[in-house]
Image (cartoon, rainbow, N blue to C red):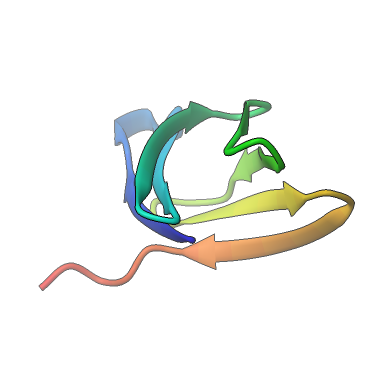
Amino acid sequence: MRILDVFAKRTRVQVEVDGRVWTVEEGAIFAESFKLVKILDGRCARFLFGDQSFELCAQARK
């Protein structure tokens, strides 16, 4: 799983899970078991997988 983009105004993120791309808002459940909990800043977000919380950040653009 990786973050592809955090959209302007931090209302949605675009993530890739197993080759499939999802565009999700806070609170949304996607890819059956993931939930976007909170968009933290312009590049990072907190997710849940089952009951485990984790953070991911998009890589810096070149």
